Image 1: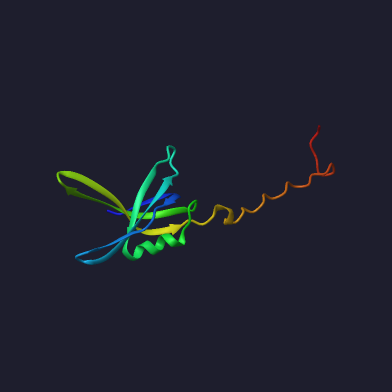
Image 2: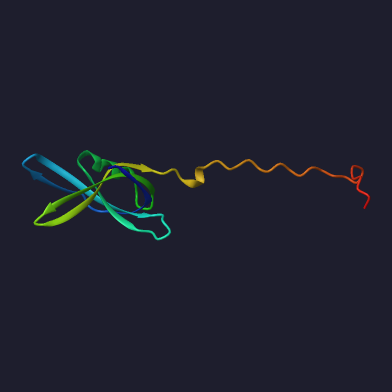
Length: 117
């Protein structure tokens, strides 16, 4: 399952790393706030080489994040992770081109006005 979430980067947490039987690992969590009518804050994580994606964005940036939801069971309890696999910084709205100006109204002079009043 792959989903997309749009929002503003609220916070980047410190990277965490360690060693397991499969080798060295690294992860970093971050929080974005959605732009919904009732905004929600969502904590997401990135693992391995994807941690470097977070260095290209700053708090306050508008992002589009592609995520996978993953759940696992441990001691008869379920835990869900929101794992990001792509982070794209949205273009600033101020950079969008302005629409062309409306055409000026035609110049009507009294000579062209043939109305009886």
